[in-house]
Image (cartoon, rainbow, N blue to C red; front, side, top):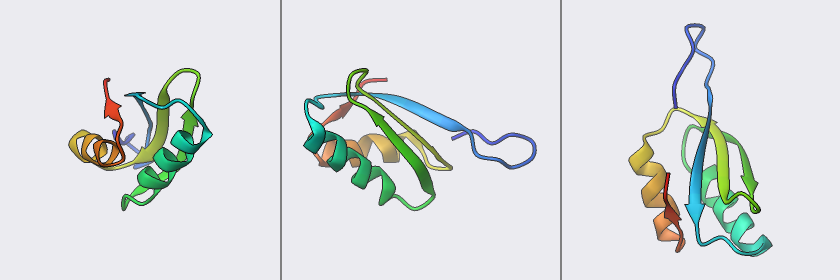
Length: 74
């Protein structure tokens, strides 16, 4: 969500509670990719983390994840 001085988007990682299977990973990835401005989404099921690039508010990420039944915990 932060940009460098050159305007390049930084990778952001959030912890997500509730993901337990590949279907959860796919649903989370699709939900994040549907947000305007988000790209390069990567989900790590073992760590319970989602990483992405984009200029989007943390609140938008939390709301999007909540709508698919999971919770952003950090």
